[in-house]
Length: 315
Picture 1 (cartoon, rainbow, N blue to C red):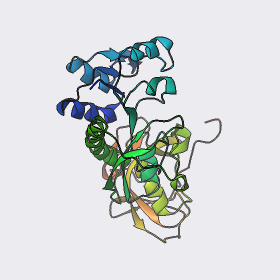
Picture 2: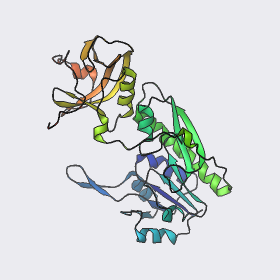
Picture 3: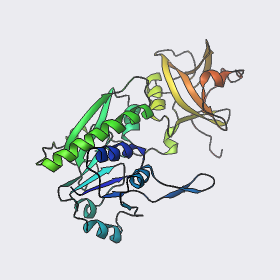
Picture 4: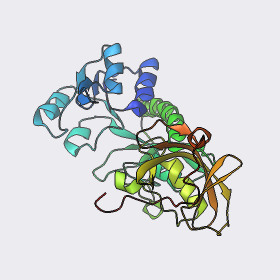
């Protein structure tokens, strides 16, 4: 089997490792170009490239998936299966080169949460179950016929990072199963029901500010859905405060204005539109990420003040 694997971040690494362990070592790996990162602009390789180099797998790093030289290189490979995990949106000229099919691993139970941020959006929506899906690629993004799904429960206080870790490995198993099915063929598939579609658009920094007028449960889901990255945020005394973990401590408390900070038995509490949450882990601008108890140590002067949803204009 001539397999090409396409992926970039950590999420794709277990899938590539699982294929190699199962005897489906790709003949080619495709990943994003190396990029300079950090203050020193040190060139950093992608997690998928690191695996490729460790296993001596040939590598392509096109700047654009529409580059004629890239398409030409793939067209000469007589590809059987193309496996895509957290890479880019591929043009038909690329994915149609796979003779037995090109499939993608998506971090949701499609057609729920189609888009760039399925794990974040699912947790932000407060779902109790999510999962991973493999599907054959087609022109419209995330709309192809479903091959396999695998689900997992989502705990009430789990973060997107917690779910991400679990789905990486659940997805790796699904990728291997899908390759086996395609190899044996024919592959039974299920058409997605467009009536059940929900969007999962990319998350930008301006999307991350907490609206304290929302109910406590909604605010809690928002915080955990953005943790650990990019992080929910609010403003405290003109400084950015990132929020990483929280819990709902009251459902219907309405005695304080939304955003009001309180302390009770060592807990950092914030009033919401209805109810109240306890902040468990926070990071003030210019400081380390801390448990709320450490953040509170010797500092109570902000009690009774209100967190501001976002920076004022011109700030």
